[in-house]
Amino acid sequence: MVIHGSVLISAQAPIEAMEIRVRLEDTTMLDGPSLTIAETYCRVAPGQVAPIDFELVVPEERIDQRRRYSLSARAEIPGEALFATVQSYPWLAHEEKFHRLEMRDLTSKRGG
Image (cartoon, rainbow, N blue to C red; front, side, top):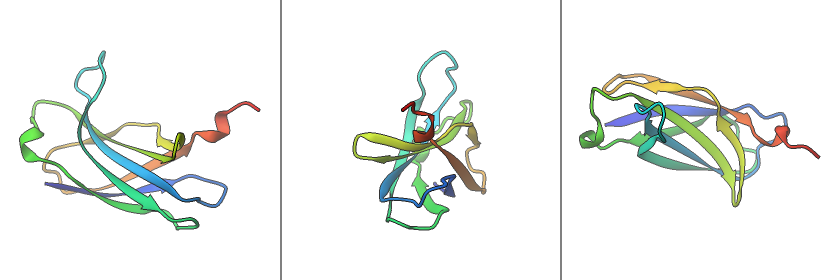
């Protein structure tokens, strides 16, 4: 199965070259870490206009209808996270929905 969607980057500054990782995670265990079910990477060119489309291939044998899943995204340059999703984006198996993930700027919270 394939999850289709786009990632919106809420940035005031022009977008620089980066890599975006989109993950489907099993988030059933509230007190434990999430388990990555599938992930894909998108390269973003300097000045590229958001939103950035993605396709995430999910092995059907890894999906259990009784569990909870969510999508997340993170944009990085080597060694530094720039943007990430900060809210939950639930995913239901076999739903035909185009997912829109919004990432927030992680660099603006740094002290200087």
